[in-house]
Amino acid sequence: MKNLILSTILFVFLTSHAQTTNAPRTYFEAYNDAVDAPLLKGMSVIGTLNNQLDFPLEIRAERLTNLQTSNTVYAVSLRTRVGSKQTTVDYIDYDELDGFIQGIQLISQTVQSPVPTDNFEVAYRTRCGLSLLKVSNGSKITIVMKSGDNVDVRNRMAAFVLDDLARYLTAAKAKLDSLASSSQ
Image (cartoon, rainbow, N blue to C red; front, side):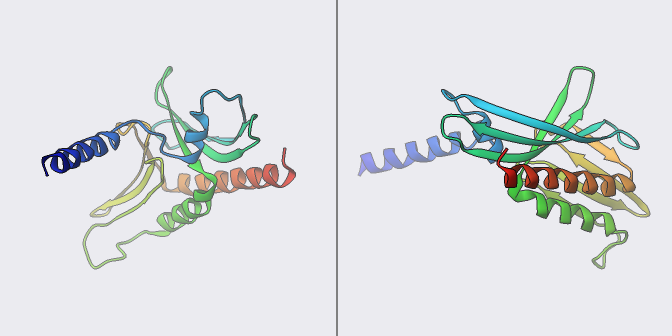
């Protein structure tokens, strides 16, 4: 009986400890962390948002291939230049793109509280921890993107930037679709 209790306690401890590690948050990151395998990464810059934001945001379509297995994964990276030497990177796996684009469009269209309250918050979160929020406080509306790479980085933006971001993400998805269909 003592062994069972000790085993259970040890299992709970190890499980809770394992959940606090810096494990890859996306499929793309998991592939990128592969060891003992040659990896080929290709990327295309789709565009950069640098007007009416706190920090410039570069959108890239990325493809990663394990040359030993020929397995390929696709993602879009959002690279926020916080300072001259610091860049946060948030990967959005290919399977999340449609939902994220639709979420951005819905957040963009929300201009008043959809619930009978004075204030509201509309949010979308991706697998990597990236959060996009539209928050109202009375008549003031703030749009913030929080990096999953560095939770202290909050990129405030003007409302029209959401529409530009959705267009860039749609273009990045089209680029990835083209790469996947041509097997390049």
